[in-house]
Image (spheres, rainbow, N blue to C red):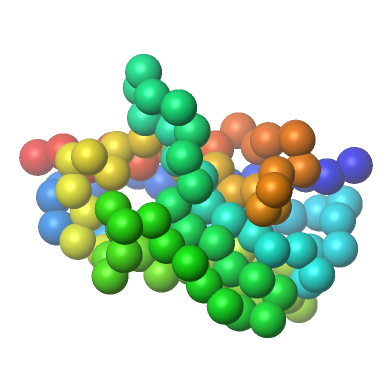
Length: 114
């Protein structure tokens, strides 16, 4: 059974940085295209970044140049480095495959506020 455990969120001021981690188990992580998604209050979940098994990345326009997705296929861990954070980045962040496994973790809350 797939398990996804996100961590690293918190409260940060505008312009600050955070690094999110996602530990995956129950899947052949190294072969999956993986992504980071987020859901803000009252909005639908959106994918903000993805990375293929070979390391090719893709970003939503809203985070391009500020966020960096990476992966460690030995540790079965996905990362999201978030810099220059803005209040509109406030959301619960989730990791999952692309397309998703259908099972979601609990997510990690990111709040950007002064």
